[in-house]
Image (tube, rainbow, N blue to C red; front, top):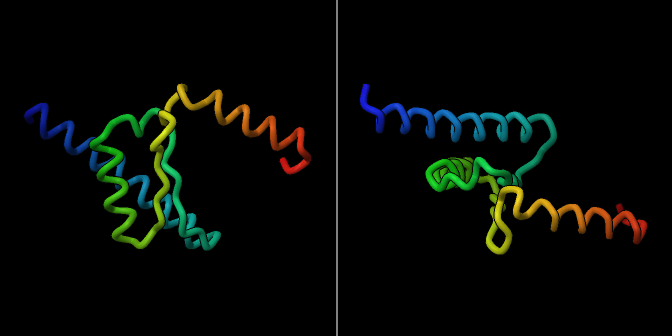
Length: 90
């Protein structure tokens, strides 16, 4: 099997897993919004495929635009959680 075919199958499997888990969460908790974050979403193929498939199931999809999805954005999240805890809203 060609390397490109193996890679495509992997990317599709990851996107399908994201959709299946999102559908399960919708059924269990009524959630219709999905936030895609973490290093896996640096892979543009996985990100674009997952977003497209989630939207086909009418999910609202949140993705990074100003902050990187990996460890580069981790510190910002930690600051926000700390600020919320200090203000009493976290």
